[in-house]
Image (cartoon, rainbow, N blue to C red):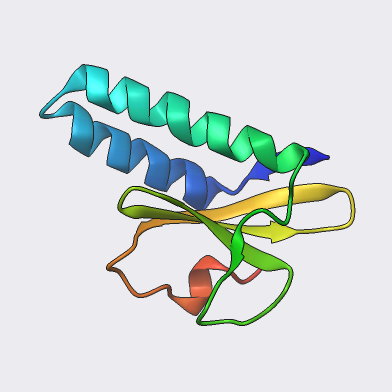
Length: 99
């Protein structure tokens, strides 16, 4: 399975990593390595994330990494990473709608 990152998800990862790096660059690099490693496992186990509770759709799932949720969509031959958000934030519909 192929993994694609939406522009929004790339922006979010960048913003979060920059925020972490402002305090601790090594922690930011470790966080980036961890998030990409976690997402890479989806190639073998695409349904390993839980169904996003707000949506209750089998094809839209999320992985939890500390205080962040990685929201993704399972498609025919790929996994699309839709967004990365703090778990305390509301998930806006605009983050998950296809553009």
